Length: 72
Image 1: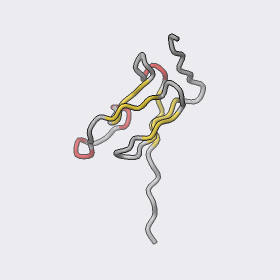
Image 2: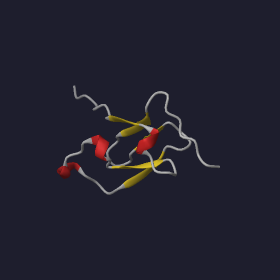
Image 3: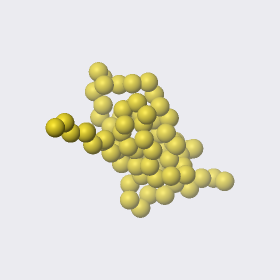
Image 4: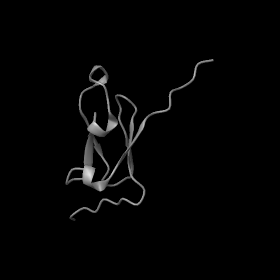
C-alpha cells in the first residue's frame, strides 16, 4: 500500500514576512534543492497563520506566539 507524503511545514517569524505580511514559495527557509524549484508563489499570512503552496504543497506557518500586526 502506498503512503501519502506529509507536506513539509516551514515555520516563519513575523520578521521573515514582507511589510504586507506575505512570503513566497520557494522560500530560503524551505531548503529546496535547485532541481525542485517551481515558479514563485506569493502567500498571504497577514490574516491567517498558515498558507499552502499550490505547486509543492508546503505549508508556511507563523511560529507559535508570532502575530502579524498590520499598519491599518
